[in-house]
Amino acid sequence: MPPVPAVPAVPADPTVLHPMPEHPRVVLLKPLVTSPLVEVGDFTYYDDPDDPTAFETRNVLYHYGPERLIIGKYCALGTGTRFLMNGANHRMDGPSTFPFPTMGGSWAEHFDLITGLPGRGDTVVGNDVWFGHGATVMPGVRIGHGAIIAAGAVVTSDVPDYGIAGGNPARLIRTRYDAADVGRLLAVAWWDWPVQHITSHVRTIMSGTIADLEAAAAQIDQP
Image (cartoon, rainbow, N blue to C red; front, top):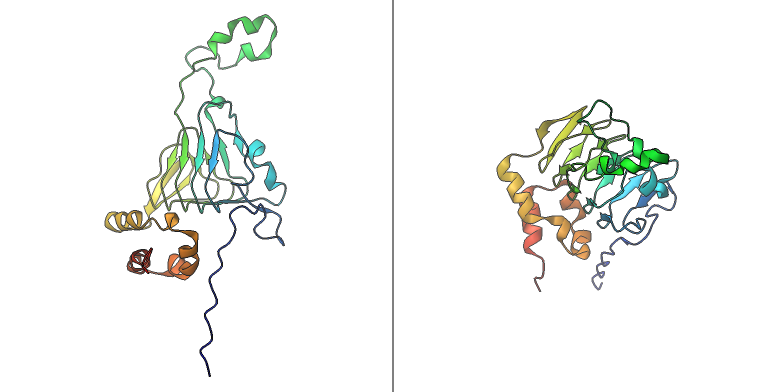
């Protein structure tokens, strides 16, 4: 009997808005976002039973620019994950924090009082980050690759690669790997592999060892 030919691995499509048609609550964000100030990598998704397609208006708040929101590839955003941007800032160096000039009338003559407020720069999320339900990320925070943000966390400071953070304000609970293994994982950077290669090694990425990942990485571009 002739050998049965191997079935080719078929990658998923990062341009499809609803990767799970039977669950319209899940959307891929890259084909959804329109703002030039928001950048999202392939296969990063948001899950919301109400209206996931409203992510830019309901989950990216006070985004008046010029700071950017950058989210990497293969991130999972639970329902209610929100990013507060620098436009939320108020003056705190005087008796009142109320933004009088924005209310119009003659108060608008004092608009210089609310321009040039200090900002923390871009908000940057690495690749393969998991956000639990209701997580909130404050302006200018940087979250490393492979991190996990617990449900309800309010992230006010940076989270390291493969760190697990939770609480309000969020604190580093632990890291998923020791420093040496984190270095190995960052060197492998599986999220940058060609999608066809990722498709062939999904089981290794999800449940293999770091050594397994390194072996799979060594196979890229081999004849």
